[in-house]
Image (cartoon, rainbow over all chains, first blue to last red; front, side, top):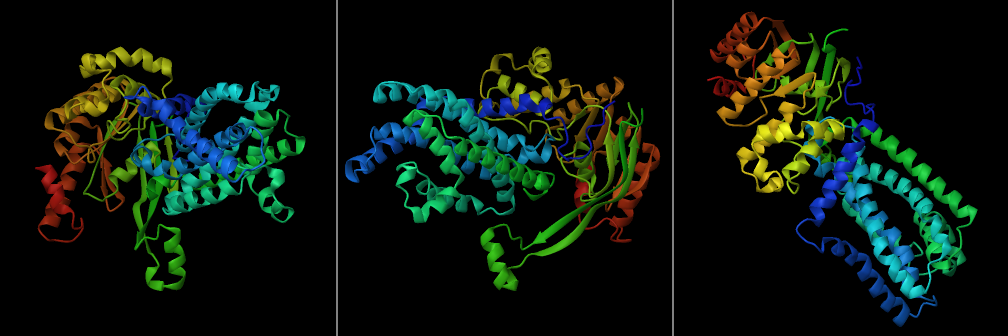
Amino acid sequence: MRSDQRRGDGSVDLLRYRDLLLNLVAAELRAKYRGSALGFLWSLLNPLALIVIYSIAFRSIIRIPIERFPVFLIAGILPWTFFSSSSMAATISLMVNASLLKKVRFPREIIPASVVLFHLVQKVLALVVFLPSLLVLAGHLPWTLVFYPMVLGLQVLFVMGVAMALSVLTVAYRDLRHLTEVALTMLFWLTPIVYRADMVPATLRLIFAANPMTSFVSAFQDITYWGRPPDPGTFLAMAGWAGASLVVGLAMFRQRAAYVAEDL
Amino acid sequence: MGPAIEVRGVWKRFILRHNRVETLKGRVLSLFDPRQRERREVFWALQDVSLAVEPGETVGVIGPNGSGKSTLLRLIAGTLPATQGDIVVRGRVSPMLEIGVGFHLDLTGRENIYLNGSLLGLPRREVERLYPAIVEFAELEDFIDVPVRNYSSGMHARLGFAIAAHLDPDVLLIDEALSVGDEEFQKKCHDRMDQVRRRGKTVMFVSHNLRAVAALCDRVGLLVHGRMLAVGPPDDVIPRYQDLVAAAQAGAGRMLGPELPQVFGVRR
């Protein structure tokens, strides 16, 4: 007989709970899109609004010298939205599921993981809608899109680590949610999304190099806008950020996860 | 093969945080202002508790409010970690202490059955197999595709109970002290426990209902102030508890603490 039910130390078989993870994601998707046939379109509204507004502000008013500017924006804003909405949702994820965590035993990692997967599905759906518009705006789809799953995979790992850390830290410090919001706004402008990375003056380069989202967004722009494969340095940076984020995030999560039910 | 549930020398410490600091802002302020600091008090909810439940046995845990009964059950279910000591559970434990906890109100009854199944770690195929029986038991055939939000409280309870009743865990943990429900529902719970017991499953049962404990349990543990004062046949342990309660009520000591009137409220 197995005795895998020793206390809440999270050592239970994660695979056994794969169905739970998928069911939680499906539950969120169903809950969100039920009752409105246009439900999914609402989730497109945010990136769409950003793209329209930034196109007007930066192309027509500030006249930023980037050709096919909407395409450039789509390339950067979709991965940004995935990162920022996952992070925001992760902060409150454990608190929202307090009753579940207190009364049912299951690997706690599933909660932040389901948040990230939910937003990943949203992002992929958004991509499906934006790809045809990319075709219309650019005239063709670059072959380098074959790298998309790979770059996205690395970003998912990175976001996963961030979500793990944010979810447990917010249980200890409830105002972290507001700090995260402010930090995300600042990070947005410090990420080359509405401008090109090479437009950043040399004096500020260090800040941008220290921003993990720079390499991810650059890679997405490379493969969707420029039609070139990301250089090995970018891949290395993404892999590094993804690995570091996962290791640190999971370590922080595991350290506190067993006590989360007490602190909620 | 050893006992189904083995609790060995378990201690559980809670840190009571008075004036709790739970924001970064508060943390920073407390650096400058000692009045903003939180006071921490150590509270031992369980002290050196040991208990072994054999497979097929039904064991009840009784004791006044705040004696650590629910904490013990949560430790065994694995939702809280023990501070010290070992807990081993052999076989699949139903880790849900309250019925209907895992419902998502925006989802239909059908979808919630699958969600609950996966919450308990059941493979999808297994849930598919159990699904017809659950729906039939709950008598919800006509409402199974309606969001649970629109269920009456009775339908809600029936679905929750039907799910719990069909999961077929090896070890069933029931915290009645925490559950709410009408008399009929409680009776249904007891009938179900009896059924489970007859099928040779292990049951652990926390309750204030001494009559139900006496009727259902092979052995009873008496938990007072986090210590297991006695474990034995219901006929020995329940009178002991009643003596304690009577003594405390007579003002012969503050043994059981200020929660006592509630204990009586539940008993009568």
